[in-house]
Image (cartoon, rainbow, N blue to C red; front, side):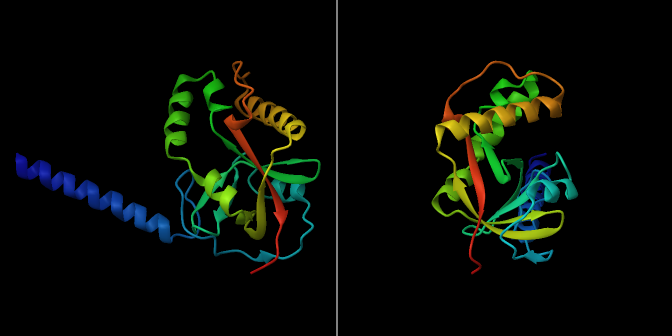
Amino acid sequence: MRRVLLGAAIVVVLAVAGVYIAHRVSDGPMGPISGGPLRAGPLVTDANVDWATALQQGNPGRGIELQLVSTGESRTVGAFVHDGQLYVPCDLGFLWRRTPNAGMRFMGGLIYSVKHWHQDAARDGRVVLRVAGKRYERQAVRVTDPELLTALRADTEQGVERFFGARLMPGPADPEAIWYFRMDPRASG
């Protein structure tokens, strides 16, 4: 019996390692699982992008792909346009702690416990975005302006409530419970 359990444990460890390696060398994330660098798709060099149109051409409501240049890791993230600028939020409890679905609160807590991309982006904001199959080199700039944060949080709450078709529970006004990054153009290289 011990041999069977040991053999099963080895198979599980090898399978998990294989999946991890496959995702790390893959071209981008696979759904919610992070992946390797974004390589496929034409690189758009125009600094002026109509983000509302680009997001509509993608998969609305399903997020975009974001790669941190410093780490080579990519992930699927939410994004939205506010006053013509593209923003990417990083929810640290502002939303997931307020969802009426207990299962989603539990999953949000698990995801939060391993989430660190926002700290990496704050240190080195060079990113590559992939939207509708096209890649864009950008500089992720953390938003700290209190007035803009208030507007972005309101936009985010409305979007999430539309997506889920339910109101969020009352929650924290703590600006650290959700970070926003504006995706500014950056020089290539």
